[in-house]
Image 1 (tube, one colour):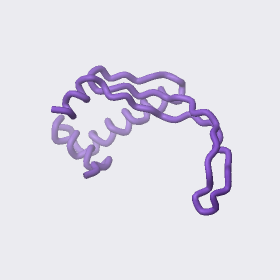
Image 2 (cartoon, one colour; image 1 turned 90 degrees about the vertical axis):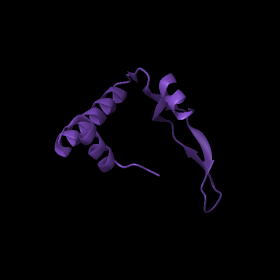
Image 3 (cartoon, helix red, strand yellow; image 1 turned 30 degrees about the vertical axis):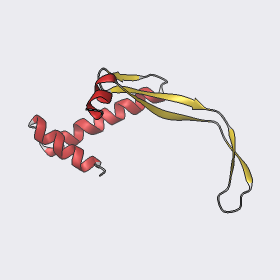
Image 4 (cartoon, helix red, strand yellow; image 1 turned 30 degrees about the horizontal axis):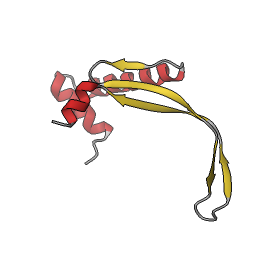
Length: 93
């Protein structure tokens, strides 16, 4: 099952006593802040939950699925997430 943004907003509102509008504002502000930090090359660490970071992916060779033609996939910066100890333990309990 996948939980979308609207469902997260609803649950945040229920658990905090916020309105759904306030929950949406909170979630949007959180996501925007994480994006800004990652764009500036910073990590965002939430102890017990995990660390959001950006990492450099080197250029590499790939193939077009339809034709099998070799192509060069350009270097890029990609987001990454490393789960914290508490989150890992909760998932494995």
